[in-house]
Image 1 (cartoon, rainbow, N blue to C red):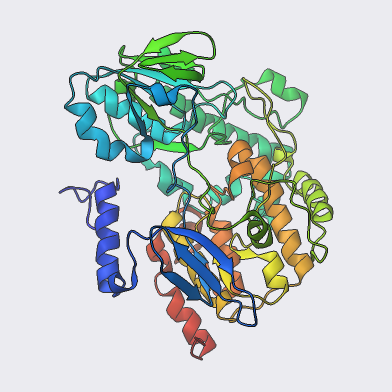
Image 2 (cartoon, one colour):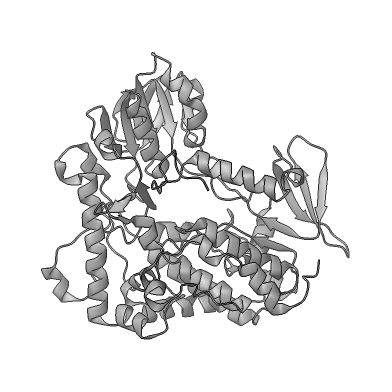
Length: 517
């Protein structure tokens, strides 16, 4: 990938760079003629009969696609979620979802009648929207509800102006500084996660990162930006002695996700007096008037909704979602009489196992505006975050669900997960017993809920722990995931996608036989 602009030392990656890379990749690998653009799948269902292929129906088309194998790669940021505010139909202002903010820039920037804009939400897209609008000279009112996950934790692009944040998070050292259920063996794991001294050191490490993050943001300056301070207090894992220690909210938990600042004027712009922050929620919209739940009213010229994403598995009905191990909108769906797994048993055992193996996560931290939920309304039941356990138990290798795991190294994880899943679909990978798969799924679910709290309840979150996941998939493939030249580099040098160059050829050479298609 070409560097950002003309500076070969600039490590930042822009949207244009990613688009150009994907375009070039598609051209180089003859993918463009195999892509059906502007096609939205409205239904994906199994056909009855001996040949139970998947039947796909498309929006605004009578075409039907039938396929024996289906890879679902819908991502999580394609379908916007827009709340149905009372009175919104009488609105006289432009209401824009953050997905469409880029295409709406000319409307906002060149329209003198748009002076005051409300931004709703607290995820990274909200921060970006606020920054963009303030940069245009707009007056911005930022509305963040009290009962959500709260403001995002944001790290500087470089710690102390020297160490690339994402690069450090991509070292193997980092896998020992964060409690991961995929990395619980060996003396280092025991020392860092199972001993008082080790957990104390881990806590101090995250406190330092948090302090640097907060200093970079300027939360202590006493203006409106202090309301953007993440809401979680540092976990008191070490017993009564922690009453002698400072209590800091921590970027460790990433309860509302994690962001990285790449623009040098980002925080100075957010400190602008043109920004007002409300911990409130919209009750109704009428004309150009937003009424908040607190009773306050705001007159605005436009609103940007950074309210997240809708159901990107809507092509499946709820019964199919349950069979595929996907979260459903109908929690009361009864279990199948032939359900191969007693999930309650495995979930209960997993809760105890995570608390025992990773004491750091045994008690949830404190949330300023409410209680941390430790259970999940619906569960992901995907072995290795990709394979429906119920179908795998039946020997049905017709479908895999990709791209749902959240990490700091999406390109690398996506490539390895994709290859692993393709081998599974082609029957080239042996699977363990159903009980072993269920145990793995339940352990992951219990761990990610405890580790990443609100985010872990929604997604297979593994922000800092991508290397143990890659290690696991490589073990399944029979390959070595330790790719560095020496022990020091293995421990301290950041892992990048290029470190895994050639792993597919390694697999093919090792197995010495063509893949059956």
